[in-house]
Image (cartoon, rainbow, N blue to C red; front, side):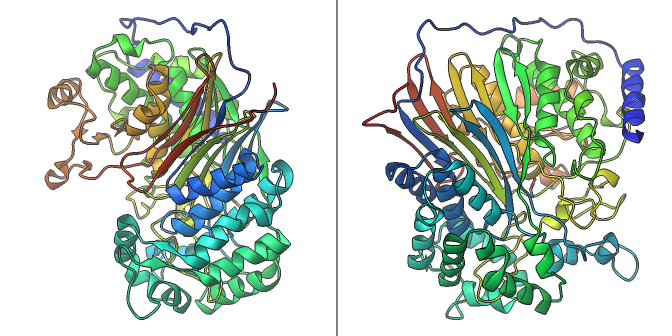
Length: 591
Ligand code: GLY
């Protein structure tokens, strides 16, 4: 109720404060349809953040599995080879399309707050937010959801037994894989935290020597944990030996987990958000992700404008204004839908988008201060994504995470399971900036059993002649990267071009466009500044800007063009170990 009132007030304030954008060309909203369309893909395509995970998925497909079995193989292998980004100790959101029923569903395997994790637990003696507790070690970890998602994917949607689709991950955990630069660099930056815990030291300092690029990294304890999961399913992780070790390790490190809360973990089936954008059906992540609602708002604000016909500065201006408005709403209205009332219908409606569009000036930036409210969370850059389509037309977009680099840094001894630090995604102290300099509010306040707000945005796009799966890691920038990806596909780019697109981002506050190198030229930046935008280009940090001397994201996407019957896969060139592969089926399924 409160949020509806706030929403109405916000709309009124915007409408009276700003001029309508009447001078912009509107565009047709339909796409041409080809005469003959393939009924199913000619093979399969997988794109993921590590080539070994992509190969694991292809192996399982070759053994007779479908996209859901492949998702188990890719997800579990990423958990082994990308501990920096995701793992069994974390969670994820998995968007599924079942070709036979035509149905889409999102598996919500987000972590939830343990019973002990009340807001007071995250305050120090002075009542300030204890950042060490929220980001590192036992109190930062939510109850993991990823293992339950693997069981659900295999049991409800896959064709192969779990032990078969987990086999590649178990083998790689036991035999090892070469440490890559990002993994070694991330370890160096988190080592101080990771060295606190004996279980973590055992894995990352095997002979007293820290992991280095090129070393073969073996995780026999993780292989054993995966074997228990393969043999016993849900109980193999959430009850019995692994559960006992997890609880003992967390509690010895000073946390408070119980057997009951582990055994009570449940994957939730959520109805995805679905909208039409210029002839595409876009299917995307509902709460507890903020991604789908924000993406729906942005696309519906932008829909009537023919972005391709605008000059670059005006195109970036309008996209930025859509980002600004959607991120403002993200801050106030979104949280775990099982705990807070979210005005989802309103936020994703065309009428609401039209109201927001009317507040956008064609040539002038809206100062974020004019949009009532306070700053929005900027999350970390970690997490990982994979996209899969199989020869039957089944699809999976999976985004999974342990939050910060190497999550909480805590591995309960004997498990090989690096726990997440997802509790930091909650607004732990309303009105106090978190580690990323931002505030949070009631909708995303922590409560026992509640899932923390996410930005993960696995997304499908379908036009009459094209099918796309896309997603990326990148904290709060995930949503704008997916937006640019959707706009890229709409503009006719290929999967690889979409993965490579230079990125820019605006999240309401701080009130600035941050851009990767190459996102736009200095001349375009000047035009944007003349419109009233603050633009942080790479290198601007020295002058106090947020800038982006680094690149961000790791977008993984697959596409099937039904008119030409061509499958393609795109892996973000920013990540040298990623893997995008297409295999053509020798014996495709009959329509
Ligand atoms: N921890 C990153 C996210 O879920 O958005």
